[in-house]
Length: 624
Image 1 (tube, rainbow, N blue to C red):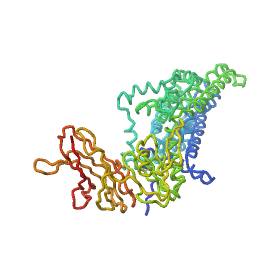
Image 2: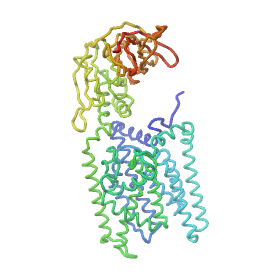
Image 3: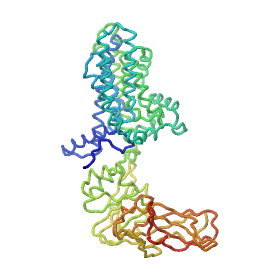
């Protein structure tokens, strides 16, 4: 009976909530005639981004009720508008990855808890518990949200202790019961994930251990990262994330139109921090920035994206102060209030600035082609379209690369995946004439060797398609071998040896018959595949010299799987000739002599090919 798995073991141990959300979107797209691809993933992110704006609005309305004398009805509108126009949030609402869920979870969970605390509504506590559990199923950067909610509860409890007459004993009991319900439900729902991590501790610790700060000049230390995280809001060049995948390189998280109200709101909240409405915002800001403080390469915009929600609310506090100032004490908020219009103009100016930076400046970066694997996506889709009529080879990326695999499976559901190999080290070719065309897809700026080798092996192969990168340069060429053409370029030195398990040796090439100590000896083996091998074999290439007793001893060598592991023997196909290259570094103290080259294959369990022999003796090489 097949095992049903709810948790995913890939993606560095990132929990699966976003993956299942994408699966739902993929299903909807296919139902309505679309495809499961980047657009569907971006749609998922856009939905979470929009819901995050709604969550910030709801939280702003609840925070306003904690300080009704100093916060106006404009606060939640300003907060939602600020988040919706913040380039930082807009960017990740279109990227299609899980960090965009974090602002939603923090804002909505905090709103529900405050709503339950104020009204006693059981549904609010239940909803808070659900979202706290969801935080642990979403993304490592969201794991800070449950501890932050504990701090929110302590702040509310502390205020209640200072003002004991504000709540009756019955209300206090209901608040305590509701808090227990939220915490208990969250713990209950997250238990399966905790059990999974207990059974797979490496997955729980994999990503945190990979990105934790080391105190080096490159990755920084917590103090340096804290300073970088604080500076990322200051709109001057070089303060923001430098990665073009996450940001307009170096651009701050906020522009000047957004920074001014944020700074004013942060100062106001700090001065009023004794009131929970403001203390909660500072708890959220500092807490959600912590994942970036203790991980490498700060500021890292997507690890700390959750902080976009409290940033928007603090900016709204600054704008709301204008509205309250213009209204006067006790005055109603009217359309003629100049503070409202100043706030609207600031948000509009910030939105225009964000749109210009994001849709014009950032979108024009040529680096985005590589940053978002646009070329790999095109390769996968085109390979899938050709799969029905052609054999497809791809170099030097592995066919298991997430983007390639996703694009391929979205396009071709019933055909074998492309043959992937690293053409800088190995080259597979069907030796005889082929009945159908074959296409070698070569990523040109990564594999410098295949385009030089192809004219020798398949002189009639022509470029049938070219993918251009963001700068208009060839990124990948499709070299198509016509049917009926036999492979050329026989080995320099022919060998007829049947090793076993369907593997034979047709010969070898060597760079030179003479060389010097301290240099590199290049050896290319021409394997012949008579039948599909049943095991993964490791190839050894040894340079041997006879000692004083006449026995051969190894003085240099190389042991590795074919193609540096990029084309293991279990992936070899009958009829292939595999050109497999090895480098042997010669020790600088080797004396001049004639040396013997020997090769063979082995498995970790001790099995050897050729069976019954130590190795195949190839030619000799003289060291001058």
